[in-house]
Amino acid sequence: VYSKEYTIEFNNKIDLKNTLESGQTFLWNRSDNDMYSPTKEPIYTTCRNYNEEIVGLQVQQSGDNSLKIRSNSELGKEITENIFGKNKYNLQNIQKEIIKRDSKDGVMKDAVTKYDGLRIIHEPLFPTLISFICSTQMRVERIHQMINNLKSNYGSELETSDRIQYAFPKPSQLSKATIEDLRDLKLGYRSEYVVKTTTMFHSKDFTLPNDINEARKSIKDFMGVGTKVADCVLLYSGGFWSVVPVDTWIESAVEKYYPELYANSNEQIARNFQDFFGRFAGFAQAYLFHYMRKN
DNA sequence: CTCCAGGGAGCCT
DNA sequence: AGGCTCCATGGA
Image 1 (cartoon, protein in one colour):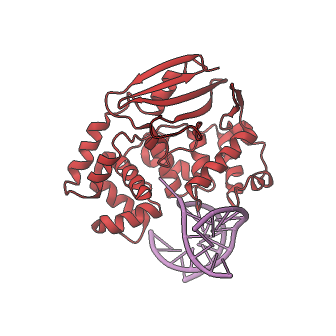
Image 2 (image 1 turned 135 degrees about the horizontal axis):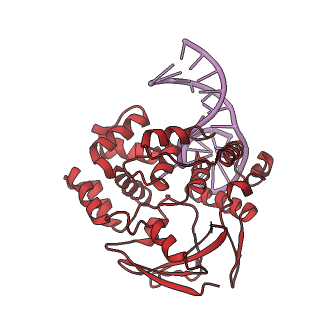
Image 3 (image 1 turned 45 degrees about the vertical axis):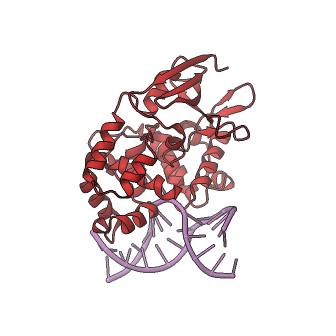
C-alpha cells in the first residue's frame, strides 16, 4: 500500500521520537513495539482525511536531519513537511533565542541540549481540539487510548498489508456519536463536551482567526475548552509559538526552577513565562514539559 | 482504602 | 475577576 517513498531533509535537527512522544499530538502510533530496539529506529504511523482522500503515513528517523517517509499518496511528502514545520521555522535560531533569554546554566539549557531536535508540531485543528478536550484530568497514555477509540469507532479506514488503520473522524463522522456512545469508549464526563463541541464545530464551519486573542476567545467558546486547552490548540495546531499552555507539570516546574515567574493563577504564570522567553516561549514550554516528564 | 491525572463548567461572592 | 465543588475512570 505504501508505494510512495520519500526522504525529507531538514535544515537542522529533527528528533522524531521526542517530537511525537512529548504530548503534543495523539494522532500517531508506534507501529513496531515488538521490534523496537535501541539499534533500530521506531516507525510511527498515522492516517488522515485530506480532500476526500485517505492518506496513510509511515515515518522513520533516517539521520540527524532527515526523515524517511512511506505513503499511499503523493501528498504524503508535503503533508509530513507541513506537520513537522520544515519550511516554517529554523529550530536552531529558536533554541538560541530561548537560551539567550535564560543565560544561566540551568534547566532550560539542559533541556534544549538533551532534547535537541524536538520540534513544535502543526496538526489539524479539529483532531487537536477534541484531543485536548479529552486531555483534562487524564494521564497522557490514557489520552492516547481514548483518541484511538474515537478513531477506530468513527474514523475512515485504510487497509494496509498487516492491519487496518483509522483516520481521526471528521466532524460529520464524529457527530453521529451520542454522549452514551462516548461514555462506552471511556471518555467519562468529557463525553458531553466532545458531543457539544463537535456539533458546534460542524454547524459553524469553524476556521481559526489570525489574531491571537480573537483566536483564543473563539476556541474557548467550545464546550470543555478553557485557557489551557485553548492554548494547546493555538500552539500545536495554530502555529502560535509564543503561547504557553500551563498545566500541573509546567506550574510545578516554574515554581521549582523559575520562582520569580511563579504566581497564584496559571494565566499569570503563562504571561510571566511568555514575557521572559519571548515570541518562542511555546517552544521553551515544550522543552520544559518534556524534561519534567522524562526526569 | 484513598489519591490523583496535560482542567473546566457552574455557581458563588 | 477570584474561589469552590463536582465531574468519570483507572492505576498506584
